[in-house]
Length: 178
Image 1 (cartoon, helix red, strand yellow):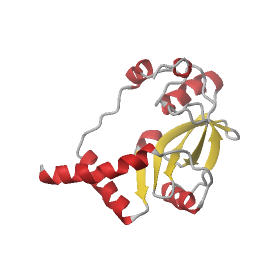
Image 2: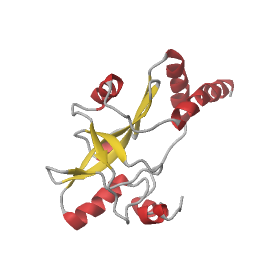
Image 3: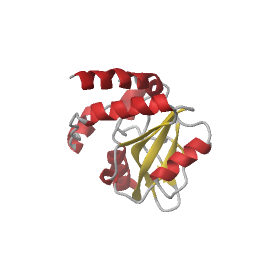
Image 4: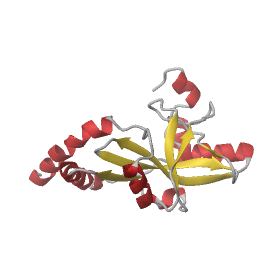
């Protein structure tokens, strides 16, 4: 219990960084170095172009539905979030491609309309959901405590049909449902 309490207290330092996470404004050296840890591919900026039926936090399901309607294939990788210059993370993400065009058919629940995406060669569920990195020593220590604490909590992925029926669509999100 004492170790867990210390980890909880140390990890709370990250809340201020998590609250500042946003799309990187530029592909600076920190973003490029982090992207190289995730993939051999270069990161790119993508505009969010969701369909009204797209579901929040269901990027893989949104892409599968878009493929049913338009063909193409799923391209997996990471969406990069940045609290410059202290902290960066990759969130597992899926987008649509026809081999030439890449389209993000999902929306961000914060309202951001542009994201940084770095594709990789793995299937959606074959990679970690989050990859995190802190740049400073104190933030690295807090991140280690956070991962120790929350790594001990089992997380089960919601079934696809339940996620699709539970999360708001882009249309309802636009109407104010959160």
